[in-house]
Length: 148
Image (cartoon, rainbow, N blue to C red; front, side):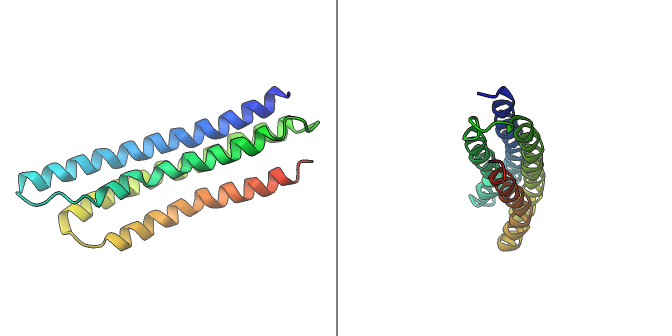
C-alpha cells in the first residue's frame, strides 16, 4: 500500500471537513445572534435558519467520497503522487467552498431573521457556492478515473 495514496485521501477528507467546520461554525454563530435579536424583540425565532447553518456540512461528504475512491487506488503502481496532489488540492477547493458557504449562510441568517423574507434567494446563493464543491468533486473523480 502506497502511503502517499493514503495521505492524499486523508488530506482530501481533512481539508473538506475543516472547511465544513469553519462554515457551519460561522453560520451557527450568526443564527444564534439572529435568534437572540428575535427573542429580544419578542418576535418568533425562525427555525429556517438551521438550513443555512447545515448547508456547509455536505462538503465533508464530498471529501469522504473522494477519499474512498482514492483508497481504492492502493494497488495501482504509480498512483501515489497523483493521489496526493489530487487529495490536497481537491480537499482545499471543497473546504474553501464550505467556508465561504458558511460566511454567506451567516449573512442569510441575519437577513432572514430581520426581514422574514428572501429564503429562496438566500438558499439559491448558497447553492451556487455549493456548486464549486460539486464541480471539484466531479472533476477530481474524472482525474482519478484516468489513473489505471
